[in-house]
Length: 567
Image 1 (tube, one colour):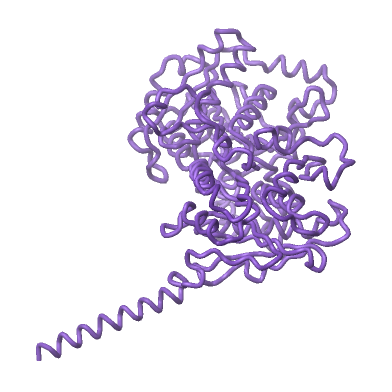
Image 2: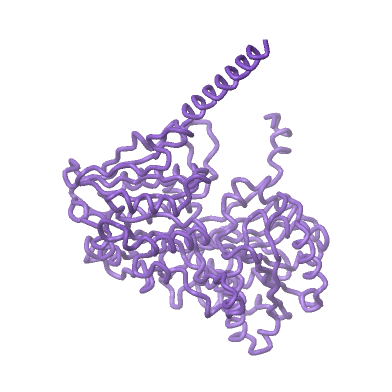
């Protein structure tokens, strides 16, 4: 009887194990055909390896949308005899472990197909694992696209250097997407006290084969400070509405602009307060750059006395709740409010080089503890707070009544481009799209450059070395990425990359200005959201409105009930 029970229990365990195995395999978790294995490249074809987290489904969807947008525009923009063709049959797969792919070619495809494949980062397959397996496959990709964060770009660059001699042909290029840090702090003890200008540069790791499509932290900070410097209404002691085409940019004659600027120039003392999160390489680099460039900017305007009004501080770690600050962030809020140099000034620029969640925790706490002081504060940051957070998802992610602080932040492309789908509806009766277009346009930039460098007269280039030569000829002309080898007559074009491989200034940067509306000290459930770009036609170049400002409301649920429409 005892043996019978053991036999039954053992059978049940075996049955459950088999069922679990089949279930996991059905979900693609144990699919040996794709799990951890790069796909083969057909003879005559080439590959672009897109290495990104397995959770980055939205990013892959936007990438595919950008490629489809390119297909519609290609012949018109680049005046080629043949259309761009797309095979997207395997772009979205049911099994999670499979490798999605999309094929690109021109004409009848006799010149070869370029396969863009998503190799998903997970606990089982990190970037080191994928790059090593690609190196041993026998056919190197033309390029690896990735590096959505500074830490991932740093790791991938180091792995690519370590694998440089293991490829069967020229090593692939590294095309960095949204990692923006100029420099990184080495982890060895000997480098702990290095000044920021002696930190190694990110693009020096995989030198000569790395190209960055996002703007660097230095360019972002320079753009944000330049915008604040040119728009004195940012520093106004009371909130000022931006009507369509209003402000300095809306004044046609230079005397009016000069008079308005002179009237609005800050006549009271100011302070710049930078705060960094010590466990975030992006935050540390961006904070250091804000501190340095602010010192340079205010030294020019106010002499050495201006530099003394720039203060820096830090938070030890970034782990925390959605709304509630961690202990170190709470201490940082207290230190900010306890600093007499800050509170004594009538205008404060608070630099928060961090993501939406951390900035939200800090600002909600600050506004609750000191609502009067924050009414005279302007927040500045880079690209880590997204347009979607402050507009599409604003009720939860960035409700202005919780954080009624004006803010200026950077975006790599225009987030309200109506030609790229902002404000459009797919079907009659639907609400207009509120998703920003900045990521779509950035992906378009990447693959517009890849296709012009990867194909020569409809034929695929032989390897990464040939693609590198062509990619260096990328230019910026009339708001698009072009290539001198294809558009030799483009007049007034700017090089798209600088000598180090970073995206050059003047090739599509934008800033966003969020202004809460007040009635005296009462915060209204409204804000003005405006997007600005550099108008290079002027001399010197100035910031101009990209489109009419958005009038944003935060009481939409209440309005829906009042109209009888329900929630």
